Length: 290
Image (cartoon, rainbow, N blue to C red):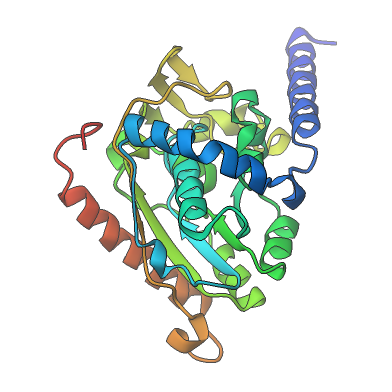
């Protein structure tokens, strides 16, 4: 076997081993792992930590319907250690109580990072269509990030841009489940490290899209690693101020008629969120400091 082919086979085998390791750690990460007692016990000190480190501010929680299922659609920032998810989960449980079911979809790789394992007990589950459908069918509130790894690893100079990469699945999800869409806009997460590039071409060259479902291999400067490639082990986020704005719920049939056009809904939601993000950015004095 030629040396080049031998190295290629070895690299492919290594990636397959990583994928199997991720799958073993995640083992489904299903809805049953959410633990209201754990949330109640840990909420005070975790919220205090978020308030001190990120000076977290969450506005508009009253816009989430008081009862029944809803699909929260958010912009996503901060790499694999995205503070917006944890902050919103804590704020939701503080406002509505730990008993109300709230789930957040996340990539398997995030769920496999050991320090982030407690997120599962707050309701973070593997981002699968089955988990999404089951959560909404069970009457829960579900948070999705359509931009996924594409948006969460965008370079820092694009930090104030909503970028779902054209992914319209959330619209069909809401229509299929018959639930309202609640846009959620956050700012500050992309300032918790210096994100330099998504590394899209590098991820494709390394076949990460096939082996790990990763379309990006972000490169950033982050503590404690310095140059951080892939963010596979997470990082210590800078204490950037995180502000989250929950917008009014959108009844898709009431707003767009009996047969909503998916593209029209998508453009409306993205435009509304971008306007909100622009407003939040305009009131922000300096990166990190807020």
